Length: 237
Image (cartoon, rainbow, N blue to C red):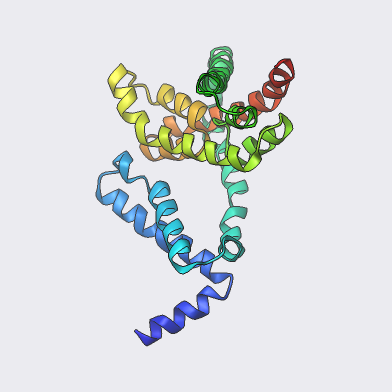
């Protein structure tokens, strides 16, 4: 026990704390996820966030201290997103044939996701800044923050909405698709990437390679659609 306490004191005072905690918690969460046959409710990202938040709260560790180590993982998000291009390249012939339908579906899906959230928030009487933060909820968090800032929203709040949206999609998509009779991995993946960005794409990749490829494509298209359309729509209102 004394060795463990000494190790904890050492790690908590160095950038290694954030890195070690993130990797350890995710590995344990993913092991549990695999043993439960990849059931959505055991999503390793969800439980990693919950456990890490609990650890930081109980140990009263400042987020800045945690992120000084976790930033090494954060840096790898860029290469990971770029790597999504490889499964698309492998399916380039198929994607060329479906390009018009995919573009129309992506634009319609992205606008529906943004406008439905804003309309519901307006009906519930949410403040204008919150509504503008809701609009980019289906875009990956870093882009959602930039779009929210540009249209008069709150970047931090936009990031929270984006993460919540991604988690809801990753947890519920399988049951929803089964319920309405959508079985094509490509269709399921594209819909999940459109509505739930990177977290949804990660879930799609774990289920089927075609689902992951189309989810990655949808994720990329939504970044472009949101960055171009939401500022223009915001000016009208």
